[in-house]
Image 1 (tube, protein in one colour):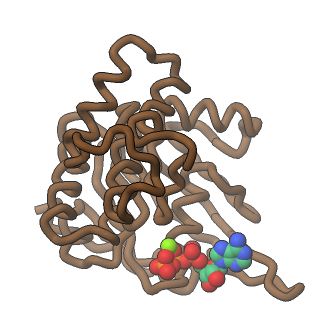
Image 2 (cartoon, protein in one colour):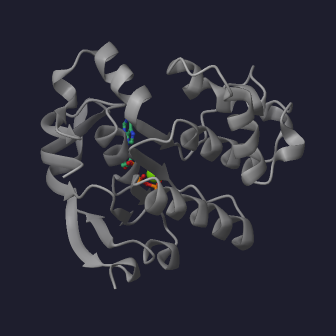
Length: 229
Ligand SMILES: Nc1ncnc2c1ncn2[C@@H]1O[C@H](COP(=O)(O)OP(=O)(O)OP(=O)(O)O)[C@@H](O)[C@H]1O
Ligand SMILES: [Mg+2]
């Protein structure tokens, strides 16, 4: 298994009271598979993805990524693990505002110390997402969908073993969205990347091997997607 969550709990504090979002959630995701997660707004999809990627700490429970208990690692150890093996596309992009599109895509490569050819790799990825003519634009000079595509190019740049994508096509027109999904599927098939996709788009979710439905703080349903057939 590439991703295992055991007894995962997450509560936020809301007006002094605990607000439970995930309740003793268990899941396992096989290496090199493509799994999508659906569920209503507020059901905890972004929360779950943040925990699975080790970006946020659970109230209790554990997460194993590629056999590593990530909350046993120090914060620095976790950051290094992520830089090495994990790509993340945030629902709200999280691009660095003072860096150009090209520089944003270069960040993960620089974190890994990959310097030779990095500019070419980053430029080619931006080309792939249709932004070859926007390399020097800053995030504020890009449309929402363009920022989303820079975030995707950035997540792909270190060829991660695991890619988490939170509504990566939420701001894109159908055609651009479809080409982005094809790119993710290619990474999944050819690069052997384990792909975890959160989406409200059911036709997109169905392309996965498995569709997990989040509800009541747990994975309420697990059904095969079209990718499994
Ligand atoms: N930092 C926080 N502090 C307090 N409550 C939070 C925090 N982050 C999320 N929540 C609450 O946790 C719940 C789950 O939020 P989450 O963002 O995981 O939902 P989601 O399933 O991703 O929704 P959407 O489909 O709208 O993106 C929501 O009710 C939200 O209000
Ligand atoms: Mg969300």
